[in-house]
View 1: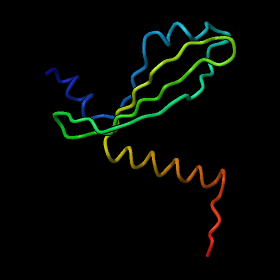
View 2: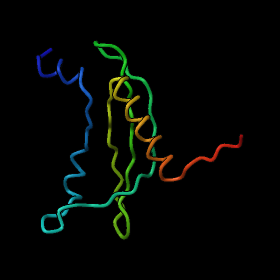
View 3: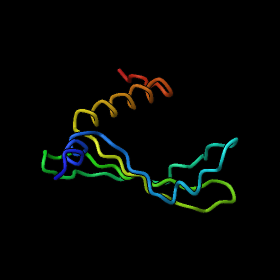
View 4: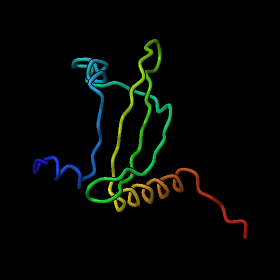
Length: 100
């Protein structure tokens, strides 16, 4: 195993499909809005221990019909930090009122 592959296995990363490159318009537009259409996840074993794998299914909006899978692999600590951040932001967006 190359040193680069070993280093990547210990890091947090996202993988975008090559088809997504074709869906992004050239400047001056320079971007594309995709709708989150699905989310699944699980644990993935690796040589360096288990990590959290997420699969985000994103879809074109409007007249376009493409769907793409974006993969996210996170070390457990990074997954916890992401979860904590999302919970804090969701609580700020729509506070949960205590029933006590």
